[in-house]
Length: 270
Image 1 (cartoon, helix red, strand yellow):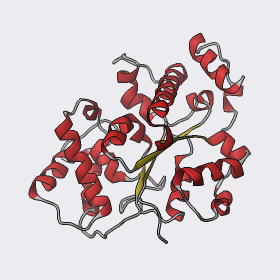
Image 2 (cartoon, rainbow, N blue to C red):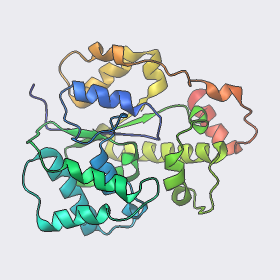
Image 3 (cartoon, rainbow, N blue to C red):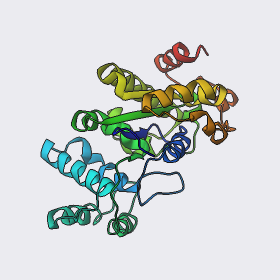
Image 4 (cartoon, rainbow, N blue to C red):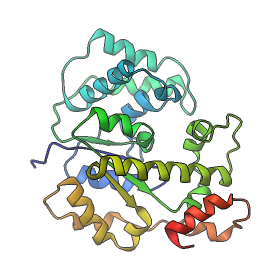
């Protein structure tokens, strides 16, 4: 299958339904990595970019990581000693959410590689650095997947709040609770809407709740965004509404900040 040269990436707040979109991307003929977990995360991206200091790297350091990522994902070119040293250095120390043993396991997947013209990746944390990525990778497109922020506030998956919440909410003693989870969701969503204005045709904001309710409309729009010419509707069987849709209705809204509830109300008319 010959596709266009767009590189497609997928991200969102953890637990938003990105796994399903990654499955669709793979079925469309895109290579998404040699090292994937059960959620279809591209773990090479995790190794290179899921670290708090990624936000403070200078331009050259960020480009080194990005060039290395692209090289491993799309070519079989041998890695230089400098590139191997970078990889080993990133896997040498424990970091929040991943110990060094887990990071070092990622290095086992970089030896046997092939040439891939049609490639992309899924890693929820991609949205954290997507502005830099879009500026440096001109053929890159990004699918941002989201679910109702109130439902996400009661998710068991609060890893992004733990990792990025202290930075985005400017509170390094941040409590991991539904109130702060919703606040993080709102900040992230507002930021993505602003980036959509900047990059317009290169960002697709996908409402997973709507996908579950009207998969045909969303899938056709996704096909257009990806410039996918075959039948995207054949992937409707991948889409199943999670039982957690609407779980916020089992909880009081009294603990949330009014400004965050107002923002959710504007989106969902709750």
